[in-house]
Image (cartoon, rainbow, N blue to C red; front, side, top):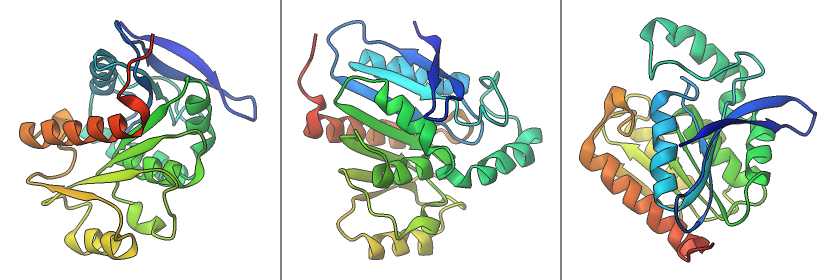
Length: 225
């Protein structure tokens, strides 16, 4: 079972993170960057799932400077405006990379990273700006288009929904044109196809298989005690 731990940013600010450990051999560390809803029950369950796959996982609460604590529910449409404002204040990830780096540094290598929605854009920025990562898997990061001049420094893959209104086809093509070497995987789904709000079973399954394969190719394939 996971637990809440306290991490510290470079400026001394302490923030919460959900922490899970593998029950068997460890394959690496994993940082999961949350969507605009924060550290939801779904992401805590997902951390447990990846721990079963061998990854010691941290889900940092990236909005703690503005709104402390984990989310009690996966989504609440009535809070959409407030949560979006938090994401905007955080530069859709650019303003919370200090917390992301602290989470990376708290894990023994190799360390991988994945993120969803707000966290998908954060993952893209972490691949370009953070140190200590071995690979990154970004899911439907709608603001990646605003950071096309950033170049991932580690192997990175993007997962996108073909009918995601937050990532229209022209944005996806622009990403591909700017980074032709980057794998961009389309799925027959809309936004948040891994989360309860937009869940699409086949897309969630295939994107996880591709993510685990990416991690395995980049140091997560061998078990560690």
